[in-house]
Length: 383
Image (cartoon, rainbow, N blue to C red; front, side, top):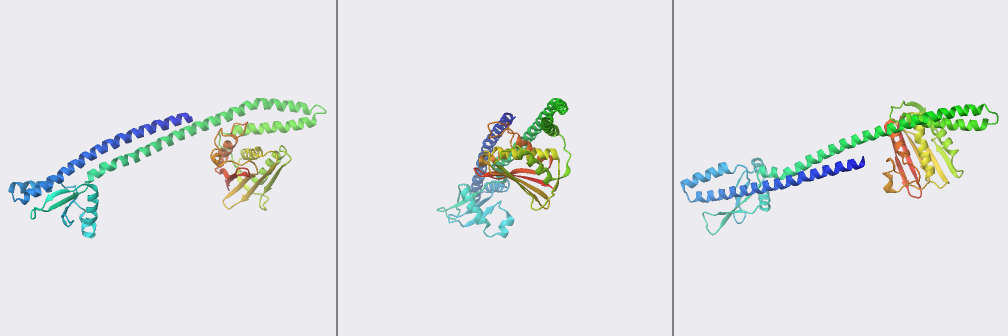
């Protein structure tokens, strides 16, 4: 899946680069062509004005045609060699009327844009007037076109990647649900068989204690099977006491933990804190977080759970004094397959986050972690 996504990204990136390169090249080609044509128009204008100054009737007609038809869009300013403004054409009339510095600002802009066209002074042959000009609106549009196209291509790529990501997530969800239901189905037959053997053991004298313990383990297997069976289905949420749920799961883990690991729970004086949960799935999350905390410690340390009843939500913090998580791994801990353990598939935290985020519409995240000092996971549930 990841290789497919990578290939799609690579192909899209190459297509985008090709489109942009062709667009920039062609746009620059057009821009240079239009810029040369506009320069020729200004030169024709200057030539026409020079001819007009010779008071030739034919030239006058030519200059009039050039002035009125050949340059309706190119802004320009005619000045003396000392930058005294003689005339201007195709500037914003409103700006000219309202801003006394507008023409001077445009003059500086035109000076930076193009070299001036020399215009002979008809009254003093020793001096020359200069014509500075800017870009027409068409030329500006051509120059900005690659930027606009880049923006459009970027949006296109984002939409495509989002669609691919959504499709892959949907496929991944289907795989998860299928695997979970198949696991539950496969567990069903041996569990039923074990239940029968346990009942037989109960009828045999001297095996009562063994049968009782085996019965607990069989019940545990049934619970695990039930949890897997609920993956992919819409779970039924019910109002439950979180304090009781957490205490029961902590007691279960505590019986199986090393003696030097201390467990504690803090409810800030409240004996009952309720929220809408699916008890079997919620227990699974707490179990995974507690087991994860145990795995992070070398047989000793402290594990504490605090449950805080807030105005609109319930905050549950699971804190340990274990090895902690490095900064580079914090963003990876909830990804399927990620694990720092020698054994394990790296699915516990991923499943836990899926249960809280998707099924309970809450949040599960790493609140705080520091290598060598421990980690705190936080669960937020809406009330």
